[in-house]
Image 1 (cartoon, one colour):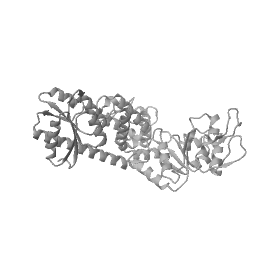
Image 2 (cartoon, helix red, strand yellow; image 1 turned 120 degrees about the horizontal axis):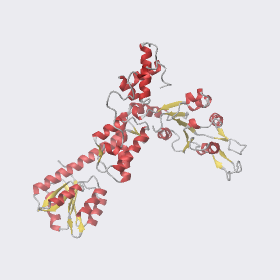
Image 3 (tube, rainbow, N blue to C red; image 1 turned 90 degrees about the vertical axis):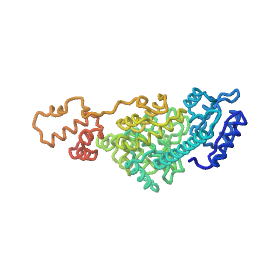
Length: 463
């Protein structure tokens, strides 16, 4: 049954119709009815009141009822609209439903039909409100500082961030490109005691080496040819707050000792100055590269690595936390469709299956781009596989380019079972472009078993 106190707007330019419907609905004792005789009056009431239902005639003197229906669907998309039509105008009613009307009633009215249709419409509004409430609560429960996730891996990272609230230790955020390393850095800052102070970012790969030192430490007027005025360094701008260095692996070797000194001594010296300046900024660095390997190859200073890597937060690839995909899809669909002003009911089952099956080499960033493209291309109320423009998921047992025993051809000598297993695992990984989740599935083991085998056969670095 409809909830008590449901508010209904009736729009008709005939006072007797307004009076008739007001009296009919008032008898039920659970509806509050307001009336309007023009579009302008109706739209004004819609702005001032939260209605659970609109009942509108399609003929309002010289005004188009279809235009009003379209405007109501834009301004109050969750409010059901019942259209009133003259007897026999079925084609008109069907067109109204195509434009978004909930249902129609014919004039002259049959009281029982009106009350039944109104009850169904109000119940529909109630269910929509409840779904929206549940969706909002789910989004809140699954969001941490605007990071949408509910997987165990991400909850573990959120828990670690919470434990860092009162600490100022340096943090190194690692993981593949597109996993949201800057969002994690912002979450660390916003949950810390430095939240009210600046959060300053620097992408080390985006600034030429010749300019990077001046950006970091600042410079004095005349320090070099183009230094027309004093410039404050980004480390100084982050005073009291957090300084986030993205793509730290691209920091030139020539600047690494100077950054190390700034971390150790808590002071910097601007180019062209002989006076040092103390700094108080928490440092968070991020990279998608293997800094340990770079250290062993003498491409990154070991002492700087250990200064940065006091706490390491390693973000998983999206394919390793697939349970987060539906949440992210809903979040991106709502956000992007609102920007494009294209409301959607959701994704078809086939489209969601395709999203869940995709390997997502570009991670969350690729998923967001995919949803943006889908919203731009979709023509209906549901996103379909055609809108996603993704390859069909592999469903067979042999995704390989050659024979399953090709890996043996490189070994003319007999191999032990252990050597064969090692060679086969390595070959499968190469065939699936190191997609470890897919490799584990094809090998018939879980990811943990595969990782143990990689460690056992010392394949972690080569695979």
